Image 1 (tube, rainbow, N blue to C red):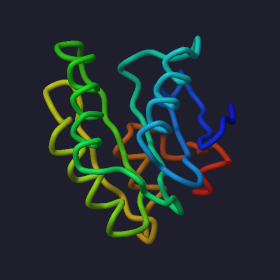
Image 2 (spheres, one colour; image 1 turned 45 degrees about the horizontal axis):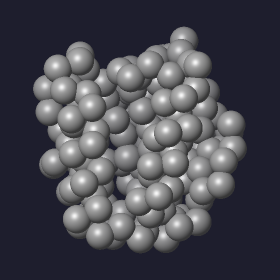
Image 3 (tube, rainbow, N blue to C red; image 1 turned 90 degrees about the horizontal axis):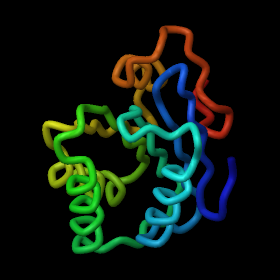
Image 4 (cartoon, rainbow, N blue to C red; image 1 turned 30 degrees about the vertical axis):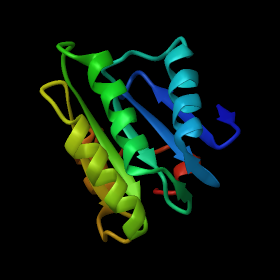
Length: 144
């Protein structure tokens, strides 16, 4: 499914969803993405997730990242467990992902940051997200 600013795919058989953001990555794009994915019939709150923000222009303040992380943690408190992966390609994205990771991680979720230039990127993502060795990522992620 493609929307303005992001594209996503939910794979219930792999128990994971995948999001690729395009252009400007700001608070509204994050909120719109969350709304679209959670409204999808295939969505379940504890799916593992891969969020790709490579090649995006980041337009989030520290306060906005803190606010978004609070929304995630308050919505999911005490409801099981999932893993998240952030796929980034620059130091600003890395810094914001670290802030979100530090604020949002709890007994419900754990996040890991992956860099676009990692040698074993696809393999490492498969391992982290509990995907099969030969799992084929959605084409829009350009990982296979």
